[in-house]
Length: 61
Image (cartoon, rainbow, N blue to C red; front, side, top):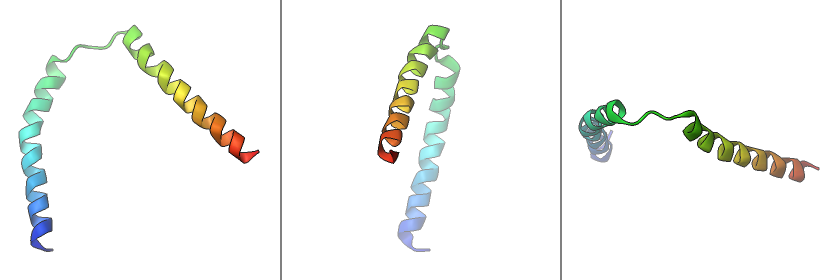
């Protein structure tokens, strides 16, 4: 293990120490999603998945 690896590990641990309390606060105080919010997420995701499946099917045939 060289000094770059040790320094990288120390920086990652330090970053987690500083980010964790802010993340916990954001999770506690964030607004909850409604059904309409989730559908606004699921519909485009399903469209992208369908398009990828279509592209795979076009390449196979």
